[in-house]
Length: 155
View (cartoon, rainbow, N blue to C red):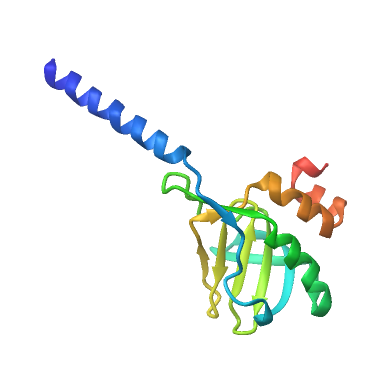
């Protein structure tokens, strides 16, 4: 009986420690993976998995001088570190893809951030932007009816 109490006590202590550690959110202003001068274009895309492949289909594409406005808005966002318990391997239904000259793509998703390497392999990061903070940016640049067809909170 003593052994059972000891085991249950240890489980409770570990669970409490993990809960407290998961509540701490380190944050920082969003920074790009590369210098802004290396950015070729920015796209806001729908995101889905098909046949074990990630597919991003653009709604809106920004190139040249129009890129600066959306990049300025992205830089105003706050990024948060995910704890190992929170880690999502998904990016969400809408992603912002920042295309660099070296074929790398930075990805800001509604559920997670990451990047796509030059080979087309997707890599999630242990960082994200809170969806309520990202939502106004999406609403500013994507037609409301398009967003409503994908995300229920836009209907």
